[in-house]
Length: 445
Image 1 (cartoon, rainbow, N blue to C red):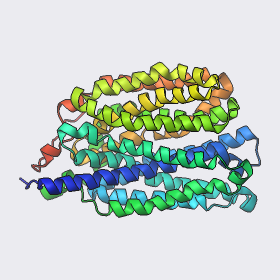
Image 2 (image 1 turned 180 degrees about the vertical axis):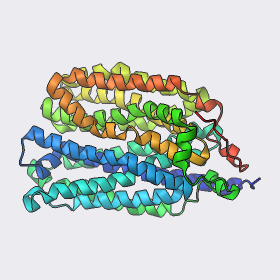
Image 3 (image 1 turned 120 degrees about the vertical axis):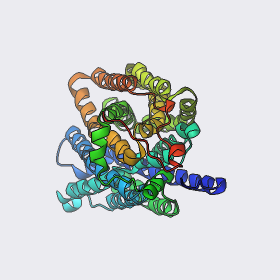
Image 4 (image 1 turned 30 degrees about the vertical axis):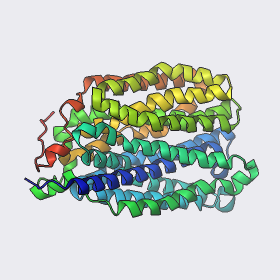
């Protein structure tokens, strides 16, 4: 039996771990939101100017989507290392890759300068960014869960979700500030500023992350010699059903985030001919509300269980799927903000919050990082193509088809949560269990 850490050391280590996970997630979602917003506002014009406006937007969204295609591959490879060499090492690698790529995009020459080389370089850096992001959020969930106690795991495992809101808020705030620029100035140099700010965030993140100790549970696995050398094979042998259920359960926050953060801005500006400000304000308001909703949902999940709170978020998304578009079509700036707060700031954020503890508790410590990341990254390709799919559905069939996509995804996720276990009942994330150096053996499925 390992000796428990002193309360002071444990509290200090937990605080550092939570701060590290938070800053990494802020950077990840700042990067991706900045890229998505820049895609809606500038990248189509700057990197694909030889085609029509609609085709340019589609091409830019396709480049945006390419980044999500690599996320499952990167997520599996890097997450595997997290189960073999440690969670902390993987998180440092992720942070460096994301920062280099984001800063590089801000320095790229445009099509008018270097021709076809410009979109090629954009795709390459987008892929590097995606490799780094592939295991960032899932590993942050793993670390947060493994530093927590069973009693507060829902709350602490929701902290990376706060990083999502903070990252998007930061990105939206930067673009809102730049909205005062004229179109000429914004396309000439203003679009670069958000990417260069992201590069600076890396240094803050690295300073914090390098001071964090390895997770208590992985440390215990090393001491007992129970580290799995091929965690992916072990995961698929013993947890196949749970991987599928977990992937379906979290697909709504993946798809919903892209619909409400990225596509909604393009829909308001391109289809409804509105200025970008109302949609950007709505995204900011949704994420501000999310800063309250996320910890509250995590705390409720600790008290009443993961499943009922998770389902509350998913059914909220389903209920507001069509009213969301009805409110946007009023072209009333206040109602646009209300729409984004209801479906995104409340519905999606509840689901995102609870998914932290839910995913971590679905898998035993030996394969947890691989399981969490594989479950999350499995739906990332669909999420990445969501703005592209939604744009195509809008052009062919109108907004109602996009509403069907939103509602259908939420109901599929709800079905998966209903079919899956109430993970909070047995505390399978096991910080308390692993403090004695014992790993729970999951039954083969």
